[in-house]
Amino acid sequence: MLNMTRCEKRPKVQYTPHPKFGTVFSPHMVRMQVSSENVKDLKAEIVPFGAEAFMPSTIVLHYGQSIFEGMKVFRQHDGGVAAFRADLHAARFMFSASKMAMPVIGEKVFLECLREFMEFEKDSVPSEPDHALYIRPLMIGRDEIVKVGRSKNYTFYILGCIAGSYFQGDSKKGARILVNRQFVRAFPGGLGEAKTAGNYAASLGPQAYAETLKCDQVLYLDAIRHEFIDELGGMNFFMVKNGTVITPPLRGTILNGVTRKSILEIGPTLGLTTREASISFSEMVKDINEGHVTEAFACGTAAVIHSISEIVAQDQVGDEPTVLKLPSETPVAKKLLETLKGIQRGTIKAPGDWLFR
Image 1 (cartoon, rainbow, N blue to C red):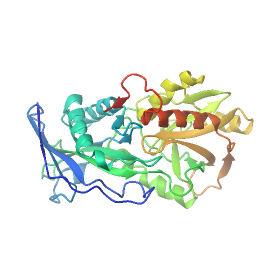
Image 2 (cartoon, rainbow, N blue to C red):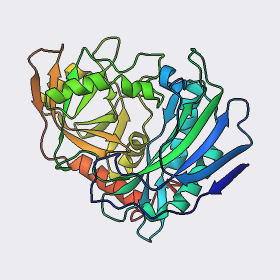
Image 3 (cartoon, rainbow, N blue to C red):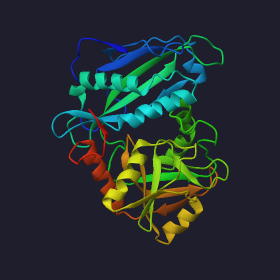
Image 4 (cartoon, helix red, strand yellow):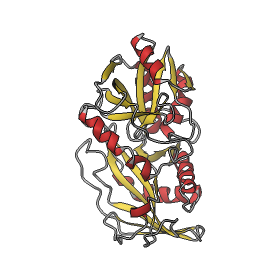
């Protein structure tokens, strides 16, 4: 049983359309203390969003026991609000907690905290087209000890921020993506399938290098052969080959993306063939040049679906890059995007329980 207390409501945040992602926060947050010895009698609170006090010895700052989720709450056409596929995010959060030796608070508690937060913060859910309230559930180790080991005490949070276009500038412009065989995101048997801070920390160096080549993101290849596509630094990958929508399979090194799963499921309802299959980067280059691959796109909660217009390829850092251009017309990505947007906002009937009100 969850006990939830609430602070006095603060005014909703003011913002200009399409603020820089992750910079405009809603006025409240959920905070809950969790012990590894007790995940049953939990007390949560909704408090004003603000700074928290941390000792420099707090274990998460040293050994990285941190997991999170990224999901969105959308204003519905009837004026209400709903989170998209909250059950999948809850399940993935529990998976990440288990993988990181952290307390598993349970999907029911996670969803109850989310429902309370959505109700309390519903005035902050934007009504503008292509906007949503991005939700960031987070749990971190809080023991104040500089010693390798799992924490006994944790804090669980839910934060919200106003989200418009993920890519700044022209949101309709395709992304420019770097593939460098030298870069590795995750190894088999590691943490690549968990949504934990370390995975994203490891991507920061390659991302900074990609930006020197005017690239938006890095597309990673497998760690063993440096040949088969895994995913981008923060998104899953799809290509359209001879009319079939293909994404790499889940093999323990990529995130089980909620948008990825949704595309695989709704594609057939739109007359599209979707499947999971290993994608050789060398073969994909050949297929792009021969016209067999007509589209490629990234997908995730933050970006939803974003087409890829150019792939910049290198074997090693400093090599002269080869630039592959993809067709400017992206009918498959557009069809999938418009359908997803309609489902998320309730203008297209959602399959099953995809909307959490």
